[in-house]
Image (cartoon, rainbow over all chains, first blue to last red; front, side, top):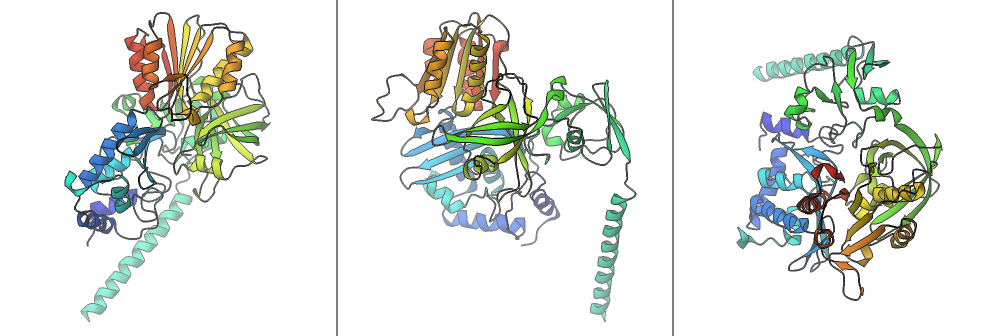
Length: 156
Length: 368
């Protein structure tokens, strides 16, 4: 798919050393538009939307906040920790505001898997359908995210 | 023929573009020579540096360290400096970090601001006390499954002066997770009186560049570089009763303050609430007991939010906010010091204010 000039500019901002040291793209050489389209298709195949996924991430973040920095049990079989490190990050798509470096770690005790995401991830997924490029240290594979957070299509 | 013309056209455009790009690189290296520029600091100190480089690294070359957690990439927004002379327009890379109020005050990001002419800046006086230290790792000890105690012996310079509660920046060298050195801030847990030693308590952060380095690569005998001290989280010199509240590695600055009080024989009423999830998240309990003996009016209150079956926990249970609410009857003559996650700080602050602790007497070191 053809990438717009605007999208090209955003992709430039996602390169290493512009907003974050390692960037948002990993070793993904695809155009940003292709990354977005392919992840969108994957999410649709499962019968979900980015917004539903982001809502679930936010819901678990809110539940985890009650732990005040420590892991806390969240029904039915999750443990969630919301912790922060110093610093903030802007959105590479140019949205206003900056996002605190808040790490939300969700352990799914049922399948013994654990996933960590940030406030910026929630925004990038909910507002832009962006899960980061392949090979990025912070990429969230949509399928794994959906499985670990137990996001069902009927929640839409 | 039209295809041939098109190819010639494309070739010509590429050639011109390449030529212009080379010209720009040469121009930047030669014509864009800003010579030496002067940085006037706080109107009484002046240093001369090579122009064209960012303010942050230029100051660092002069051994003046501005706090920065990202090593100058413009991704942490910490290296803010007030500029009192004309320094040109804000760069797009600065704008996300600068509020409207800060814009009015001409606050700039030192890592993004390139020095093209003489400049005047204002920085906190205490930054002149910040130095870079070469140190040796003396020991690494697991305090819990996700918190490590790192003890460093200072080599050059071999002593540090700091206020209990302050932090240093730890330099992570290039390794598999980072192609360039990065800096991360950690509170010092050590006694200020032990000037040759710096102790840190580091909590593992998932995918964290620095914590992964410390947990998986650092070993006793390694040389490391730190700089500091920084921060305004330290004990105020009053007679008020003290409440400390911390969780996880937030223990570090509080431990330093308590040991400093014991070393200096400061006698004040102190209650320290430490929040953890279960017994396996608690640490330094013996050291706290020892401090209770040294500081006669000190009580340590560890509280578990979710003690596990079989742990036989007999202490306080509940979130640290609930425990604080149960213990603190009045905030009169109280000052509070908090260290932990922003969520913990916000929630405990609310309880303290509800109990009458004036907001201005609540000091905190928020991770974030």
